[in-house]
Length: 374
Image (cartoon, rainbow, N blue to C red):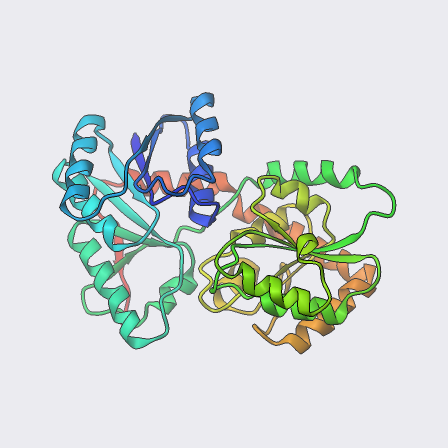
């Protein structure tokens, strides 16, 4: 089976990481190519180029950005030339409609678009999301959510609009566990204890609550580290500085050594909002065996098995976050118990299970979608 994966930029973000892992762990017999429809972002380019060198990714197509009929025409030409059996589109966006149109006219039999974020709460913006999904459906593109939380956020669905089966995201849990364990062994005596969060510095996250809570709970020998970059960085750096923290020590920016950073951390915190679609960083932290605290929002609740794999705290409630962080910092037994819980559930999210689900889905002979009751 020939699969063309489609991204709109090689950002250091969740859908790019998912595409990388799905290509790397594709079942035997799957021929994978990648199309990047917007070359302005290249942070993840080295990782995909490494897949090419390994022979896992057969081709990497990078286009100059275009939209509208030109994008449809280029998609048509590429699909006529490469003859993919299926397209897996990661960004659910309007330009991808044109790309899907070109692929459909070229005869691609199976198209899917990944739904990685919850729908907006605002009724007007929700209707816009519904219209976008309806247009994908008219083009024969199946919208595949990664959590039940996303499905529920889209309710009530307009009459006739269908969604595909839920296919959860995943990561290489075994590789992360090994790399984190190796880094943990190498920690020197007296190494600072660390609370770590890995996420883009984006408005749909809520690093601000974590920064404020850590500042109130911190003890000597403990540090906060935030991995990721984005538009919120200046604001968040200002908050940290006002609270007496050195932004240069707190904000690590984009990093490719996430498993090693997890191995050198003592607590994983994931403060986010109801707009969170999945939170793959939670699975990485579970794989590394870290104690986890996260916002009690639908996506985190789902990934953490309703709190069985980590503590769920009210989103944005700085006082409760402070109290829980204070307890985690002070109590080794509490951290140990949370670690045990995260390790016990990590393998449920392994990327090999995710890749097999996607391959079975893309091999289905026709649109495999289910109508959800409004």
